[in-house]
Image (cartoon, rainbow, N blue to C red; front, side, top):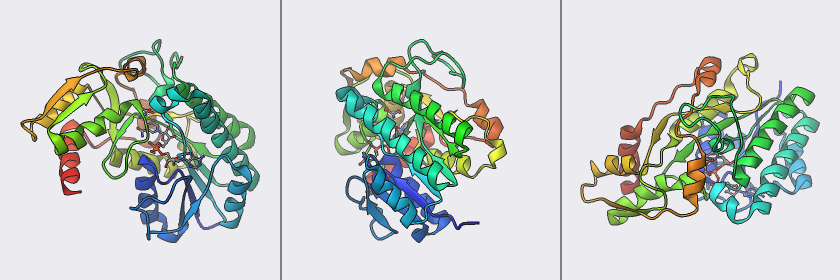
Length: 315
Ligand code: NAD
Ligand code: SER
């Protein structure tokens, strides 16, 4: 059997930095190649190999996969929901063609496993708002959501038709402090912590009672690795698994922060992201992931608030 050699595409992004570091701990620094279109993230410098790579350049990607004897690919390069609405063509091209390039190369080179994240953005206004199930009405209204839903079916297709072992999670909004978020609708739940520490106040672009599914980054990284390490016979979903941890509104996260930053103040000035947020479910049913590979979150709002504030102050 080939030794594991992993390529992370989009490694300088919000998830990429932490996922690369976690994979390097498991597989060894030299066996996890970080790659991105932009420069190497400061936190990754000196911790393992880095290559500059554009996922849209299929030849260049193919050469890297062969040259580095890659056995697993984690594809994180994408344009997220809010940025996607500003440039729908760019978002569609990157999110679709990037995935198809990776799936084709994985098929040709018999890469053992591929990871590609989907999102709660696949759901739309006609999906159930509470405990949104794995299989339900799915009519996304953003270009990001459309690209993720189409991507899920490409993953399913490459698995069934060509036996590519591609696995996927529908991440909720991810909250973290190590690297900057990349332009999502849920980014307010990160900005609010930075502003609370810097200036004791925050102007929120969502209404105070907008509930969204969220997750702290350590849970998301663990979910990703647990999914990828699960025995193949446990994977019953080849589109993308629902996963969930917590749901809260801007008013609730503000109240949680106020327990520790007592002078914290929040104002609300909703913008175009309100329509996107309102189109998504407020909470997600992840019982299929729980049954298949025993997914269970660890962080609630209280635990996340304490950890975020502690680390942002430290940094
Ligand atoms: P991000 O924007 O922070 O990072 C994406 C990275 O991809 C960036 O470093 C960017 O430079 C890189 N990139 C862009 N175009 C590229 C190209 N052509 N070739 C190579 N690299 C390129 O995004 P993220 O938040 O880390 O998200 C990673 C994945 O997870 C995406 O597929 C996203 O849709 C999904 N996701 C994220 C969240 C979240 O809350 N962060 C939630 C649901 C799903
Ligand atoms: N956090 C992401 C976004 O808001 C959800 O996929 O775009």
